Structure formats: C-alpha cells, structure tokens
Image (cartoon, rainbow, N blue to C red; front, side):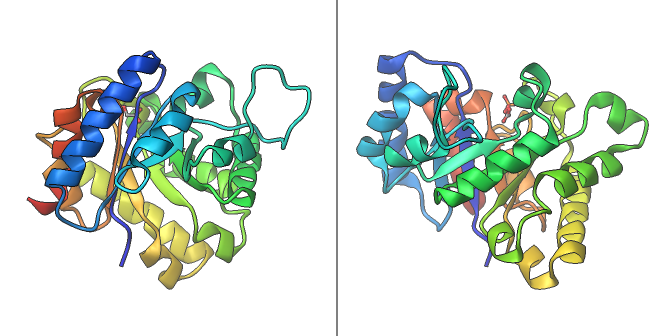
Length: 253
Ligand code: PGA
C-alpha cells in the first residue's frame, strides 16, 4: 500500500506568530476531521519548524522547504539537514521549481541534498516538473526523465524506497492553471514506469507520487482518484486552514 500524503508548502509566507496560529488551527481540524490513513505535512519556513514540531508532530508532520548539501561549516545563512532533523522535522522538500529557477539549483546539487537528507533520516519530497515551453514542444517526458536520472536514480534501491516524488508542472504552480486529472495521471504513470525500469515493479508500486500545481479543494478529489496520484503538494491553498484540511479530506470523498 502506498502512503497517501498531502503536504502543504507555505513558501516564504507568514511571520512567526501567524504561522504558529495557522498551524494550531490545522492540527485541531485534522485531529477532528481526518478519517483515513493519509499523512498530513506542513513544510514551513525554517523559523517555525521547532515550535510546530512541538505543537502537532503526531497529527500533522513537519517538513522544511530546503536544506544544505553539507553537514556544517562556513556557509553563512544556510541550514543543514541535520539541523532540520534536530528540531523534530521528518520531511524536506528538495528541488522545488522555485529553488531550481531562482537559486540555480541543478540536478547534480539536488542529488547531493537528497543524499544528505537521507543520511539524516529525513524523507525527501523530491520535486520534478516541466516548464510551459517544454510541455508545448513535447519534450516534457525527456525533461522529467533527466530530472529523475540525475536527481534520484543514483540512489541505491534501499535509499530510493524512502523518497517521495512530487510532480509539479511549473506552468501550474501558483497560476490557477491545474493540470487536468488526465494530464497528471499520464505523467504519474510515466514516472512510475521509469522507476520500475530503473529499480523494480515492486519499488515503483510502493513509491508515493504527489501532484502539485494549483491543487485546491475543488479539484483535489478528482486528482487523488487517479490510479497513480498518491496525494498532493499544496502551495497557496495550504495558507488557509479550511482549504488545506478539505484537501486532506479529499481522499475520502
Ligand atoms: P500552488 O503551489 O499550489 O500554489 O500552485 C504548489 C507548489 O509550489 O508546491
């Protein structure tokens, strides 16, 4: 059975007090309303992590949005995977398209970050996705395959089995333009086929593959009902407790 996961990505939003308050609301609602075995995660800015992990760790899991590829040292302003782990985080987003685009994170660097996350017992939520041009010129399968090959396919089978993949078409992130459930399913099935070819059918069947990009309470149930979609990575809608919790509940509708 694949894990069903809904992960919120707050990005660079919410000051400390607002983040703690929103998270408390989400924890209470998830505790009262969730009925199913899905996992809810909030990936907050670093400054919230320590407090959030203490507030709701059992009900809603905590993740970081990035980590550095080294253990420690003279990297002013950076945070290591070990530091993230030390405050009670269990997850870390790696390779979000905004990191790739605005911080020039290459597949090679992301592969290093993934290794560090795993060494520190964090579950990587490893993001891949094509741009609008790549979608329109039909090269998207190739782009996704390269991101997988260079980002995570260097891992041993045992390590890869701990990774969650998130398919986030760049053209759908924050744009209100969701991939249709058929478009998303097509890509998810492709990703699973590539995992099977690289590792095994068994590992491919056990890998959770999340969809991200303008996922909201209205479209989540249809997306999550697709055979190869095992949950979502939620940006904008994770900043509203009602919307986020309704997406968590969309698995049961
Ligand atoms: P969005 O963002 O839900 O606001 O489109 C998704 C993401 O960037 O993870």
